[in-house]
Length: 146
Picture 1: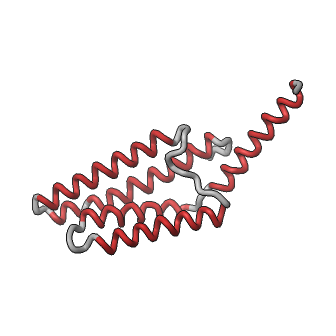
Picture 2 (picture 1 turned 60 degrees about the horizontal axis):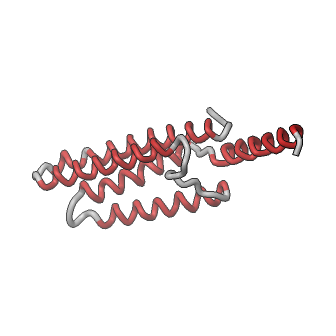
């Protein structure tokens, strides 16, 4: 392979990465939906017994619906735990969610049920902001930065 062929191959790779990024750009409602899924998951923890089952089931249905929508729109699902510049942000979201869950559990055990419910909007905001930020990093990494 000579320099011209190698350059053309690298150009084709860059074009393919750009096409994946453009195809995977999500509308705002998709990010809001992810925030709602995470808020419902937190509500299943913060709501305590016996109210945990319905929000948990709705959050799992939401996860499945988002997966289905992503596959239908783009033909792919991009795992948040993929290697790359987005991984630290994904891990940060996971750690913040676990911290909120433990906070909700401790508040419920202490009888502070209303305070425990404040973790629900916090989970929504954190997930929404993280989702938007994750997409920006991903698009930039794939060559289609916003």
